[in-house]
Length: 110
Image 1 (cartoon, helix red, strand yellow):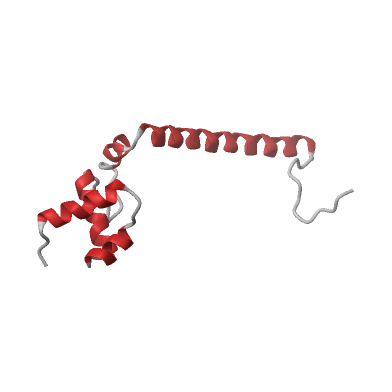
Image 2 (cartoon, rainbow, N blue to C red):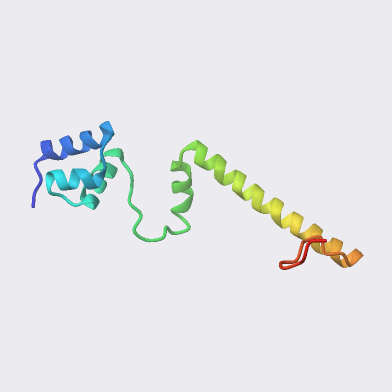
């Protein structure tokens, strides 16, 4: 079914104006939610990723992310590294002193 370009633009504009969902627009105009989602993404220049990106494509996708997402990813990597460091410190402390700094599950309060 070929869609009238003006109708397609109207649906995209109605979605982008806010206050309605893909599902509601789909019911209103007789299209699937997925179809309207794809139209909006195409309009916004968003590439759909159906398969896992290859290693070569990954840097391009990372650069395309908004700066706040990049900052959050950097912070997450930092926190994971910090967590590994703290786990290693706890392991070394247990080896040297024999004291387990982590509370065991099921231990009774004193």
